Every structure is written in structure tokens, then in C-alpha cells.
Image (cartoon, rainbow, N blue to C red; front, side, top):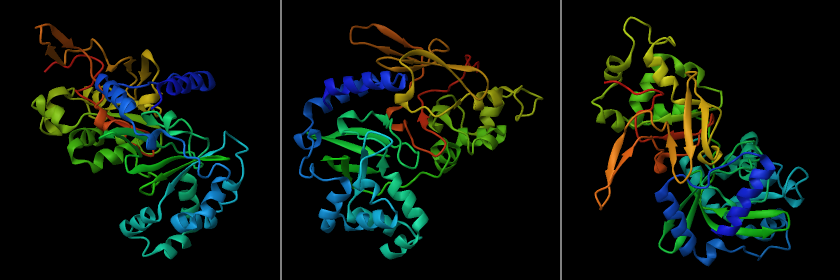
Length: 372
């Protein structure tokens, strides 16, 4: 990623939307980003100009032999004319363009459609699908954050970008499923990024995501027993989640163990007066915050428990500094560093759901020290 261009991008975002964002949230992540920047291949950093005298739709029309199926989806989804023109409501467009093979793979995995023609007949879904692949703004891959793209799709949803390195090449994935295999095709009305898979609109909530992942079973069951899950269906929220392995470190192997350790005796689990309810509801922020949405510096955010959580954004993301001691590190020189904060787990952050992101965290999170 071009560092100077990236700095200009974030400075412009701070001015335009007046909302600070995080550049990178872990020291290892910063090292990885520097590595990616230095070793990124020309193919991934370049702006392709083989179609720069064409609009997005003209390019697809000219290259129907490669992208015939998505071109047909744009026709049936009433989007082709939109992408022939300039964007009257923003800075052009960005199209994430699935290959024909990607669409074939989508159909093979989807029991609802036996073939491409059956997909075309589902016109309401085709309209949503084509708009979900189109950003309301022109965004080069150099300006992608590690997190949710600032510009939303034409459905109003946000997409999530993530970065990794394979050899000398940078790999960018969208929604953690679709690799960008040909980036930055520069059209007169925006960019095209060719992708390896179809992007599917996310329909599950953050709580649904917990329920579907067995390694988060303790927190999922705790939210059910506390009753907090009843208000986690449609509201926008951010969910911090410890995997079961974190609970196991404290000898908590089931939700019953958690109840016996923290619940207030004689008080219903579903009332705010119970520490069990406070613990579970403290894991939920009001509003959807991807990692690049948090404010730079130290800031307090409101949780569903009514208690505040402190998130400090700097070279690392530090959650609830000084609330408890979570570990120690010893350097080669013998110096001891106390870990007095919780951190997000980079491999489990920015998980996309309909209600907002899920972020995995490194320790049990509460607004006060847990006495065992």
C-alpha cells in the first residue's frame, strides 16, 4: 500500500466525515502492514488502464466473453444503465466484479438455484445482489482500510476488507471470502475490482453468529439465559466475544460454571441487578463499530449494561486498561511488562453480520475486576 497515499486518505476522511479512524490496531499488525507495503507486487498496486476510456458497463459489454454472467445479472437487476453513467450522488462507483466461475460456484453452493437461469428468475434477489457488489464511491485498493470500507454499497451495507501476504504478493479479501484477483481497473466512472467469489449479503445477526460457532458456546448460552438475546435481533450493535478457550483458562467449562462464579445469589439471571446479566450485557456496544471506526486515543463507549467501556487506540488497541492484570511478558533483558489491558484478536476481528461487527477478544471482559 502506498503509505503517503494512505495518510492522505485518512486525513481526508477525518476532514470529510469528522470521524477519527484507526490505521492499524496491533503492533504485529503494523509490522505485517509494513512488510506488505515493502513487498507488494506491481500487479496489486497498479491502476489498470486497459479500459480507462470506457464506463463500467461499457467495459463489461466489451468483455462479455469473460464476464457474461454478471453482465446479464446487471441487465436483469436494472443496474446496467446506472453503471453506464456517472454517479449523481457520490464520487463515481466501485464495482466488485465476480468472474463467471465465481457465479457458477455460488450456484453450486446454493440449493435454491439449480442453474443460472433459475437465479435470473429471482429478480428481487438479483437486484439486491448487483447493488451489494457496487460501492457508492470510487475507491482504489490503496485506500482500503483494514476493516469496513467507509463508502457503503448501493444496498446501504458496508463491506469489510482484510489483508495478508503470500510470498511477494499482497492478498486482499472482501468479506473474508472473495479475493481480489484483478484490482483497480480504471473506468471513466469508477473502478472495477475483479473478485474470485460472489459476495453474499449477510442476513445473520451478531447473536446468530455466536450461536452458530461452537467455540463461543459459553457466551452464547449466557446471553440466552440472561435474556439479553431478545434485544439482539435488529438493533445495530458491536459484540465483543471471548472464545470458550478463554473461559477454560479460568476453570469455567460451561455456562453453569460461569453462573456459579459470578451470578448474584437469589436474584433472577434476567434482571439488571444480577452480576451475570451485567457481565453478558457489558459485551455489547450500542452502535456498529468496526476496528477502523473507533476514535484515535482513549475514548469511552456505552454498553448495553449501562456501564462504560474504555478503548484506547494507538500502536495497539487496549480495552479497559488498568481494570485488571491479564498477564506479563519478560523481555530478553529480563524486564517484566505487565499486561493490564484486553486486546482484540486480529484473526477474529471485523466479523461481518447484519447487526454490526463481532470482535474476538483476548480475555474475560468486565468493567470491574472479577474476584474468583
